[in-house]
Image 1 (cartoon, rainbow, N blue to C red):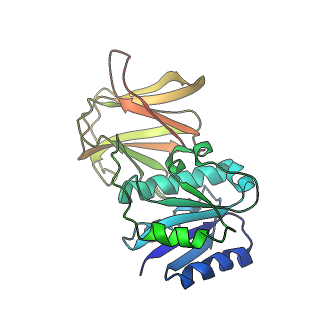
Image 2: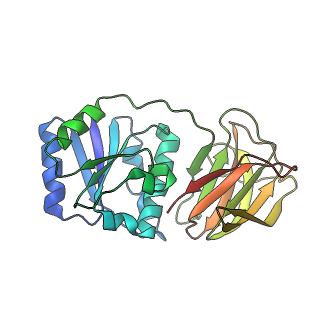
Length: 258
C-alpha cells in the first residue's frame, strides 16, 4: 500500500484527522505529525527515515500562509526537503495543502520546496488529486550537484556537496548567515575520520544579490564519489557554492533555505 507523510504546521488536530480520514477512504496509508521548530535539536529530522522509504509516495505539508512566514519553519522544512531529495531524487513529490484563504505560491518558498504542488486542503477534489499523485512515478529530474546534510545534534550540522557528473578542481562554499567552522573531504555519504586538505582558505568575502557572504574553499578534486563536507553553525538564509576557479568567473549555485 502506498504511504504518505503529512506534516502539520500548527493545524488543529480535527482538521488533520479529517484530511487523513479522506485519504484512507481512497486506499492510502497516511501518517502525520505536528511540526516542531526546534532547530537546535534538529527536530526537523524526525520524519526523515519514513520519507526516505520506497513506499512513501509523497510528502504533504499542511498549513496556512502565516505558518510559512516563520524563518525557523522555512529553514527546518528546507533542510528536511533537501535531505529527502538527496536520497529519493530532486523529483520526489512534495504537496503543500494550504489551509485558509490567503494564496500561497511555491515560487515564494525556499529552493528545496519550489517544485511543490499547492492544493487547497478544504477543496473537495483534493483527495482524488492526491491519490492520482501517489500512483504517478516521480520524474527523474537531472541534478547539477548533490547537496545533503549528514550531521546530527551531537556532531553538528554538516552539509555534504559534490558534483554529479564531471569533476570539480576544488570548491568554494559560502553562507550569508551563521558561521562556517570546519571543512573536510572524503568518500561520499559519510563524514570522514581524517582529511588532507589542498590549499584550504577561510574568510573569503563575496556578494550575491546584494547580500554579503563569508566563504571557505579548498582545491581537493571532487567527484561523484568524493564529497566536500562543511560544518556550519546557525541557520544560514542562503548557501552559495561552486567549483573553485582561480579566474574569478565560475558557475555558482545558490540555495535559499528560508
